View 1 (cartoon, rainbow over the protein chains, first blue to last red):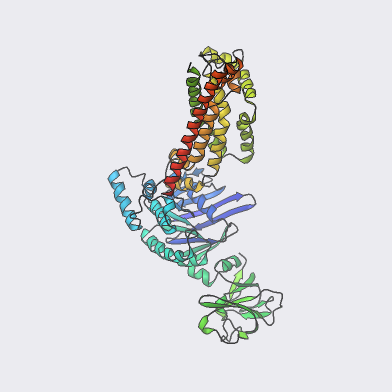
View 2 (tube, chains in turn green, red):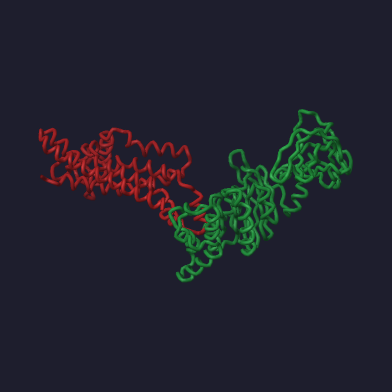
Length: 348
Length: 222
């Protein structure tokens, strides 16, 4: 079970140049909007045609520019869950799901499989409803049911939670993750949300400006994003240009400080990143005097904005995030960062 | 009262409406997928009959299908002659009604959510199935509106019809040419009778459309 993608497509001044492969489980394509994530999915599904390259699924060549192979979407057996779920508005839930079962010629088998999936997806009683009568979660499950009964060899999800209310989102992420575990095929999921990516995906491919920068285990990527775009996409709030001054030391001119690092600094360093929760008043290492610049209360945390004393006032503030019970009467005057928490960011 | 003009008008309108239904939808479907520049040009050509005076359309039809013209002469070998025949009226009405079908259908196709077609393709549904069972139903309101407009236009066609098939009682007379002829020959009462007939048909058509729309709204709300 594997998908190999290595394609190129030019769209005006934008060039998509995506190459990655799946290794089982859920692979997330993480990127800002407009970076080419959805276009990549469309190329895999056969809706868009790449200019060059090769797409292979489980040993079947879906597309190969050199050999002139370009299978029709109908022949690729790739399931595609669209952002808006794309349920056929003129058909009921039942008819929509039967569209996924059109290859099954035996009526009794078809009915049996329909009822199985209705049960699995908790859609019983909704068979005669039309798409506009469904809630967001029901619509998502109907669309997924329609795809799963079609038995695709690869399942692609395009921002599957973006059309849902935020309070439903996490609940459905949990449901979908459990369901996909049982499904057992490769899943490719597009998202711009780091939380979604972290919850759902075992591996992440980071896309930036039409290119796949890196493909890694999700946890490893969050621990060491390695490039500025990846740091931003994994939610790192504080990023500043930096230069190497020792094997384990960097200088950050914008903040006016030097930082000790845990990892050896390599050549080609561009910037450092420090996550907002990494700053601690009791941390002795990399400690520097800071000046309070503002704060914002969140439901369960505080965000404090500050500048280093050595930082010029016209530069941007730094964010620190901490739990409510660790808040002190007076804002701390010194903050430190453990060397392991200094993210070294290189050329993408 | 001789009912021939009613029968003739209805068959001309019905047949030309069916022709325009298919050709208009096909043209609209392919035009909506063409690159912009080509589409603009094609659009001008296909919409021209809407803005040209119907008599000018009739002129062009005569130039093309006149019995002494190459195309007209060629068709005459097979016994087909559009000039001064009742079925010539179908041609005249179809040409004039075509842009109405084409434009409304194209508008409907362009507002169609393509992801519906894409997801159907990835499910393995054939392009024919997608067109007739997904695209057309989703666009039915626009297509229905276009069909009704085309039928109404074909029924009321006068200019191109009178140029191409003239007015021969019992052979090429339609309601609109009859009204003009009767008025011209001072038969005011006769003209008025046909005006009433025309009003009745138009009212029935519009009522039918409203009914259909209401029913559609109700099923959507349910």
